[in-house]
Amino acid sequence: MKVMILGIDGYLGWALALRLAADGHEVSGIDNLYTRKAVEEVGSTTALPISSPEERITAAKEVMGVDIRFYEGDITKYAFLQKTIRKENPEAIVHFAEQRSAPYSMIDVKHANYTLTNNLSGTVNLIYAVRKVDPRIHIVKMGTMGEFGTPKFDIPEAAFIDVSINGKEDRITVPKWGGSWYHWSKVHDTNNLLFANRLWGLTMTDIMQGPVYGSRIPEIKDPRLFTRLDFDEVWGTVLNRYCVEAVLGMPLTQYGQGGQTRAFLSLEDSVHSLSLLIDNPPEHGNYRVANQFTELYSVRQLAEMTKEIAKQLGINVQIKEFENPRVELEKHYYNPEIKVLPALGLTAPRRNIRDELKVMIRDVMENKERLEPYRGVIAPKTKWR
Ligand code: NAD
Ligand code: USQ
Image 1 (cartoon, protein in one colour):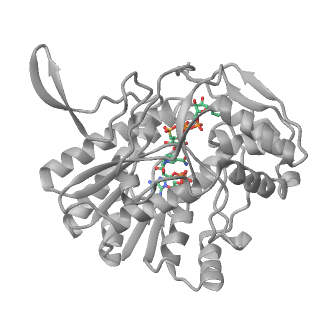
Image 2 (cartoon, protein in one colour):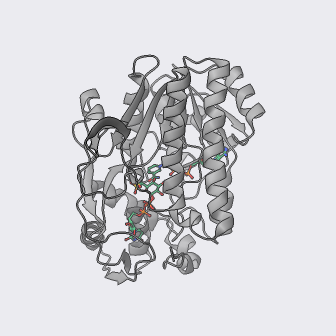
Image 3 (cartoon, helix red, strand yellow):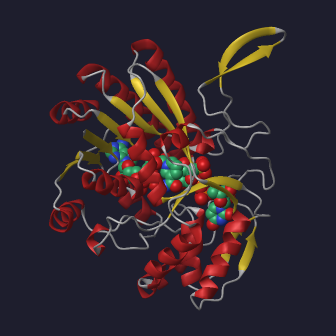
């Protein structure tokens, strides 16, 4: 199948490109390299050094014998996006190309507006470009489990629910409650996708994914094929951060009481799930929601697990309760439904989280000296209020 990846230079985009190419798909992608620049903007870097897009593509050819086509450009530029989609004529487009950090969106009004503008206009451009070029293209849009927030009800894997309001029955969209401007941008995207589906019958999978962890998939056999791995307080996600903190001998940054529970998955499970959803599209004209995760953990449980694995590797680390910089519940109910991916074959994690932690900590240990100067970007500084 011909698949185009928007955001191909990112953590998930590059890993998915390798997986799809290895599986025999014809892969192309677009990226404006914004994440590379924005991570530098906050004084940080990727924990594992990454090659330029050109070097990566050459390495993929040499190591795996695959051709991946790369277009540098910004998907908020409609003419560029439409022209590139027309040229590639893909059957599926995976849309990752958004500002993906919650803290980055909370820095100030400029960063909030950048996030909302970039994310919403990129998605609306994609909708219009697909409608224009070929409405049969399957839009595989990456949303987030964080669109739902942490409600007291079981989170449905659906776009609509039946309700009774003041004694009258109707269907409404599933209630959402984002925890940052970033998370709200994904909620707004979902509404826009639903509207486009209703207007023009475009075929879509809207994926609600939890935080991803890990540094490897089997295709990463050469350091030139590494995908990025962020760890600073703005761009790093919790478990990836814990691993770098452990290697640097810094306390693990548990925010508040640590009861915040999220729906996690490994990088391998993320690209595997995406492959399943691409290979098995919904009926033409349908909008499908897929919750994407394998296991629920609190951030305290993850800190304890990281401490245990680091100890096995000869590193003693402490867990420190930091004053929570975010506005969020630190103890709450959390029970998301998941049935689409299990029906396609994802019935259990393909990687054991403790094994992945070991792999990730070892990968980061190789880079310890390089990362020493970045100790200052770890402690939480970006505050929600
Ligand atoms: P990332 O920042 O590493 O990748 C996103 C890529 O999109 C970057 O390379 C960036 O340069 C590019 N991009 C951003 N705006 C663009 C634009 N206007 N035009 C072209 N390229 C643009 O992030 P990631 O971790 O790979 O996340 C990918 C997607 O998955 C994001 O939409 C994110 O919100 C979502 N997601 C990520 C996680 C996670 O834990 N990493 C979890 C759930 C959902
Ligand atoms: N947290 C800590 N310590 C840290 C970092 C985070 O305790 O050092 C806590 C946060 O307070 C939060 C939880 O860990 O409760 C998750 O935070 P995170 O930074 O790992 O993830 P988040 O900001 O939610 O965003 C990430 C990705 C985003 C994706 C989202 C999935 O950056 O793109 O959408 O995970 S979800 O969390 O399901 O919304």
